[in-house]
Figure 1: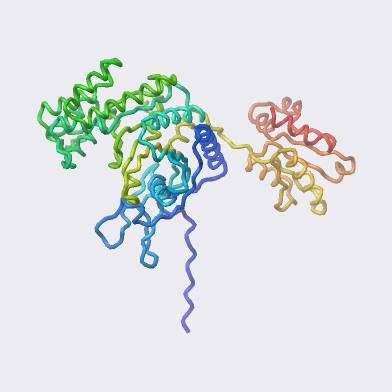
Figure 2 (figure 1 turned 135 degrees about the horizontal axis):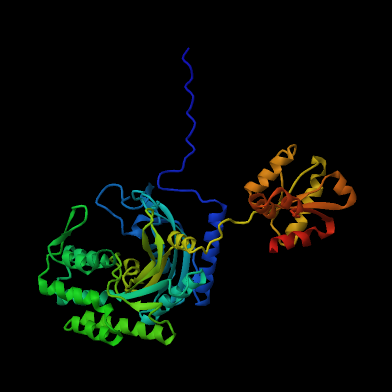
Length: 489
C-alpha cells in the first residue's frame, strides 16, 4: 500500500518585495501622518478613504497590448472585468470625483493616506507595497490652489520635525518648459526627443550642467564607460535649453526677464511664466521666502499627465550613504497640476492640482535627523505571583488604564518570575508591578523601575547598585501616582 504523501508545510516568509511592520514602526508612521493630517485639516481639506481595488479601465495608465493587463499593477479577472490594486492615490481620486461630482463641493479639497501597490521588480529599499500621503484640490483652475498646496506642504514638513533650512520646495511650470521646447524647434508630437530632453534636465543635480549639456547633444559616457545617447539637438537649441535650466542661478528679477526672453513667441510658454510668477508672488505675500519655496526650472516631474505648475520637496541636509560618503537626502514629495485626468471619465476638462508625500522616505529622513523615538515605550506589566489572584492583578491593570496609563497583566506561565521580567524587558516596559501574598495582606505593591534598573546595570558599581531605588514599596492606593512619577521622569 502506497504511503500517503504529506502536504509540505508552507514557508514562513514574506513575499518578495513586501515587508512586515512592527509596533514602533507602525506607531511612528501613524504619529507622523496624524501631524500631517492636522495641517491638512487646518487648510480645510477633508479626508477620503477610497477603495484599494479599482477596475483596470478606471486606473487606465498601465494597459499593455497583451491579454493580461497587469504591466505595473497587480491585476486579476473577475467575470468580464479586470480589477487591480491601486498603484497611487490620484487615479482613484479622479474616479471618485467623476462618480460623485454632483454631491461634492466645487472645488473639492481632499487628503488621503494609505498603501499602494506596484507590480515592479523589487530592489534594496524598493518595495511593491508602500505608503503615500496625498492632498489635492479638484475643480479650480486658479493657480492660488497651486500656491496653497506648496504652502501647506511646507507647513506639513515643519509640523513633523523638518526645520526651516533643511528643506526647500521647488516650483516650475510644464507650460514654460513646453514653450522653451517649442522655441527650440521640438515638435509637440516628437515624444521621443522631448523625453530625452526632460530626463536630461531632471538629472541636473546628479550630472551637473556639463552632463546635461552632453545629453542634449550627442550623449555622454559615464564613469563605468556606458554610453547614453543624447537628444542630438542643434547647438543653438541645446544652448537655449541650458539657459532655461540655469535661470534659477540669476537674481530674482533677472530670472523672470530671462524666462520671458526664452519663451518669446510661444503663447503656452508666456502663459506658463505668468502663472509661475503669480504663484511665487502669492507665497511671498504669506512670508514663504526663497529659503522655503523657490522657482527652479530643473523641476520636471516624470508623469506625463502634468499640465501646468509642478512642485518637488527636497530635503537639503546631508546624510552618509552606505559607504560613509556625505550626500543630500533628496526628494520626499512631488506633485503638480493635472487638468486632464478626470476628463477620461466625464469628457469635460476638470482642473486639479495636488501633492504626494513619500511616507517611507520622510520617515527615513526624520530618523536620520533623530526626530523619531528610538524605542517606543511599552506597557506597564503587572506580574503574577499567585494564579488564584488573577482578578486582583487584572484590577490593578484596569486601575492603571483608567488613569490613562498603558498596562497589561502577564498571561504566560507565572511559575518562573525571571521569565516575567524577561517578558517585560522584551516589551520595553518602563515599570513592573509586583504583589505577592505578603504584599496583598499589607495592602502594598512593589514597583520596579525597569528603565532605571537598565541604566544602573550598564553604568553602576555594586555599591552604587545597592544605593539606587530601582525597586520600592508603596501603598496600593498610591500605585498610580508613583508609576506616573516614573513615566514623567
